[in-house]
Length: 155
Figure 1 (cartoon, rainbow, N blue to C red):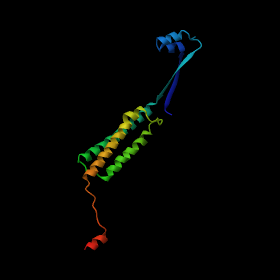
Figure 2 (cartoon, rainbow, N blue to C red):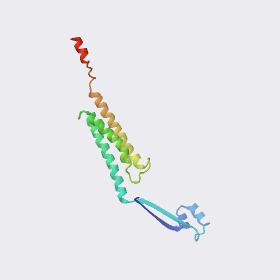
Figure 3 (cartoon, rainbow, N blue to C red):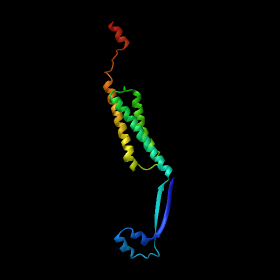
Figure 4 (spheres, rainbow, N blue to C red):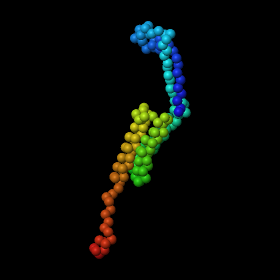
């Protein structure tokens, strides 16, 4: 599963000494010959950490691309096209899917969610709103056409 887990044994007196004066007082009451303390350490493997960092960089890159596209459209450097809506919406909905590819499928609310995923979603939604605003700003009023029968009656 990608976890490295190991345990170390030490006497309870040694473990309690690390916690300060109150622990030292308690350690006087513990018979160190009968009580053992264990330190259990768990860590991810290096390859999983690298994979998670790469996934975070992919999320940041997609948000940057959508943000740059929206900036160009909002500043009239590119014309707003329907494909931009689809692209921005695809990035928005794929962000949660990409997040689920983190090693071990961590629960919602981890540090990466607060530092990266949340901001990728916010930037993508703002970019989508900017594209929609530019689309609305540059599109004219709807062209109303009459059915062919109405045009023939006027003639």
